[in-house]
Image (tube, rainbow, N blue to C red):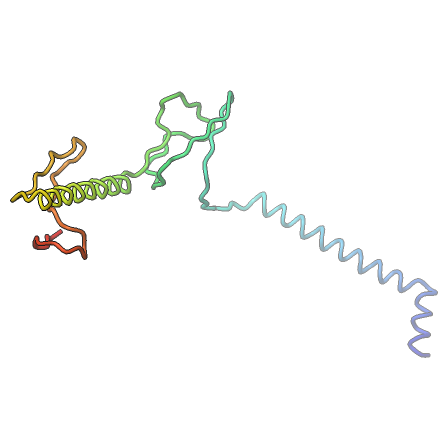
Length: 161
């Protein structure tokens, strides 16, 4: 017998059909078993996940978006999911380190620029000494020195920062 006779013979007695059905049945069983195992694992396993994202509070009455103009590190979270909050209640506290350093840097910049203005006015008006304005009420300390910007020619000795 040749192989063509075997194929023709298997089609006649239905063995080819039984073999194909057997393979299809095993494939379907493997897929169903995989799905059952995945569902069982999903119901038992706990996944610890850390993500970053924007937060939204959805009130019962109307939509209100709460957002921070300055990003920062969360120091304290005073509310939890499902809590009812009132107007004016503190929801979160941000770590003040970044905002304080930015504020102090801006203060320092203001002081340096005011000192520069006073020095330039003294040079233009030929005063022996610059007249510094009193510090702003928000400033916590007087400027440490009055320097010209780096790279600008100045008759003054460089200051130490």
